[in-house]
Length: 154
Image (cartoon, rainbow, N blue to C red; front, side):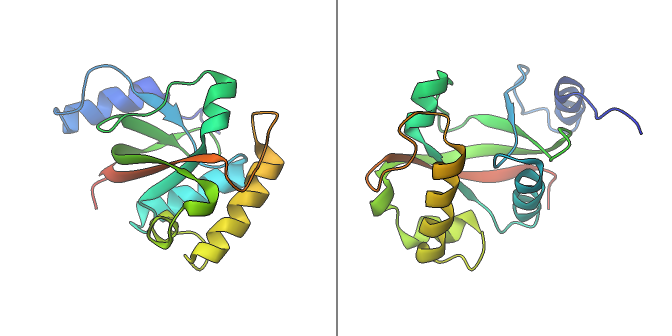
């Protein structure tokens, strides 16, 4: 089986097709915590269903990763680590977990797209996969991000 294309090579090829993309390789990451999550959520992005995501602000603090900014691009990986998509951040808001609204839950595109389901899934996710010692709390700060799919173009 062939090695997945590197993110840098993927970015260079996309820049020849989309010259408005910046020269510098942006953040490269996959959705979720395990390969199955990455593949499932990527498919929702590619289908145009998933236009939002949520991250624990505490996880950013624990890892020292830079927070995204509106206008940032990201290369999105599949579960095997291959670059498959480019998104651009269009909006960011930090909200306590228990105040994330139904509109954001719907934008995440997962399960039945309801707020109740969003809360159940995300509480379980942060209890299981948090990168910080606090894990989950009902009032934890959540970075709600909205994005648009840049590549592949639908």
